[in-house]
Length: 307
Image (cartoon, rainbow, N blue to C red; front, top):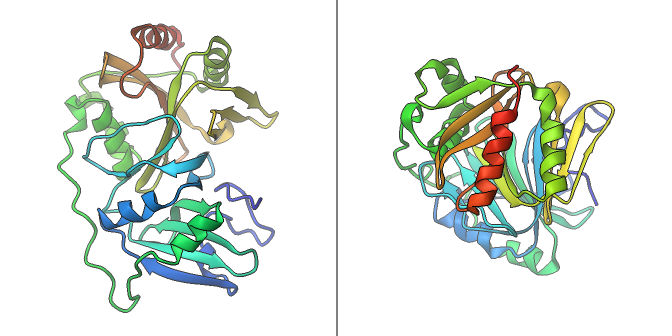
């Protein structure tokens, strides 16, 4: 299988996740990025390898898309489904790319600079045939502007979802710079504890949720970890039943524990920032979980040492 991980480098120095739509051996069709048109397109496909992220963190899942949400909408993460959240102001275009050499078909969401912020590689023949039926947009007459995002509550006194949406907007950089205005708990913690946290929740069977961010896109999964691993160069892997997350700790410049209101009340999230101050991954609890699960997670979060 072709390696589509966003951090992988081709031999010519390019990034395998970005700029793939200009291959001479590829046929590319522009499709509509507006909701609900884009949602209808994504939920057509039944078996997809979906990837979001960048060099510091990325998530890779196999399955089918849940209905994607826009920044400001309600959001749910269901095990077995690919949960994608989009900032419509940041996704400039979407394409379906057919590589004639390998017969692979990939759907890509692109930002204004043409960078791939999310990709879904269609793994079944049925899905590849369906891709040919997806409505196209004339490149000379693009679809009208992106879907309007609902109003987003201010993150300063917002709930967990408001914090995630603040990250989705600009990587959370403005939020981090003004963290003194945050009404909830916010403290810097030691990034070196992340592998131990993942190992612990894996060993005791404590379900967790992980969200990984790219510009204008967030992909999230939840459930029990089946395997964790760490390489000597500091790359950490965590495998769920239907996907995996990889974090390059060498690229993490700061780690924060942020507590905000969620389904069970105040809920902790471990946020990892890259060298540019953008949050690239969040480890937390999403939605309704057992009270014992929430309590165990909060006990673990409280025990984490300050940076």
